[in-house]
Amino acid sequence: MLEIEPTFYTPVVRWKQGEYLAHSALDPEIAKFVLPHIVLPPPKESDPERGRVLTNEELICEHAARVGAHWSGRPCLLDTRFLGAALDASEAPAWLPALFDAVDRKRGRAIPVTDLSAQPGEVEGTARVLTKQRHGLALRVTLLDLADATLAQLVRKHVARIGADAGETILLLDLSEAGFSDAQAIAGAIAEYAHRLQAISKWRRIIFEGSNFPDKNTAPKNGITRVRRNEWLAWRNTVICAKAYTLAILQLITAPSSSKENVAVAVRYRISAMH
Image (tube, rainbow, N blue to C red; front, side, top):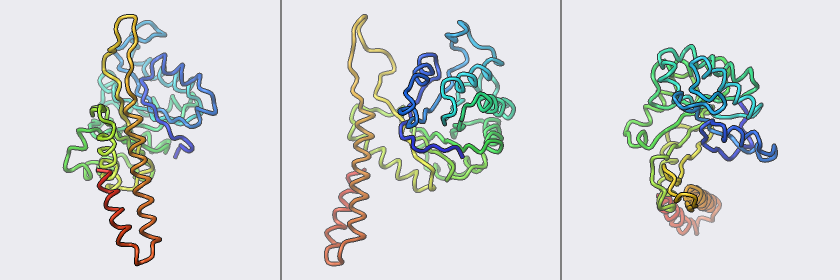
């Protein structure tokens, strides 16, 4: 598996010119803590360097070259969800390994990202990548997936079909469709979702993804607007709840028998605060 320590920050980025140049410009002392989730942009969008839409052949070589050039030797999560329509998802057993081989040749270090909506060809293609490179796997779980009562079975089956183990799989909790207007409320939801996902298996890491930024620019012409970073507040509140819960559990384990009843009340309180 690719080493992902000591990374602790995962930005989700469309690998467009502004994003890959910004990553390339990061100070090495900062970059070593960053594990970017790179979402390769839809093939129909004009490429700023070429000044036109990339051809199917260029989708492989250009994306691979840019990952290698601007995030050389560092681990990343590489998401190809938008490429299936152009390159044909049924042909993914051929083009997915070709893409990851090209990234590897350019000194990129990519972990493939999959999701539960992946087509059979994409599942097979990802399995071939994993068999050859053994860099690990990232599984994206969406808000819609979380509403499925059979989520545990779907997740286990999907990971098994790719040939991965939970211990080498990073789980991406994608809450981009959730509302972030109430940071405290979404923090409770994140804690509940994380608890459900941890109950499925012991994952390598669970990463929460979400944003309070609007879909469209709300700033007036030639003006500015402020957007609260509620996704940051939600993450902070989730961590605070988790730390409080962990502390309460440790108190319960180490407390004398005479005081365990009071500590147990604190544990129940902390658990309820996380939901």
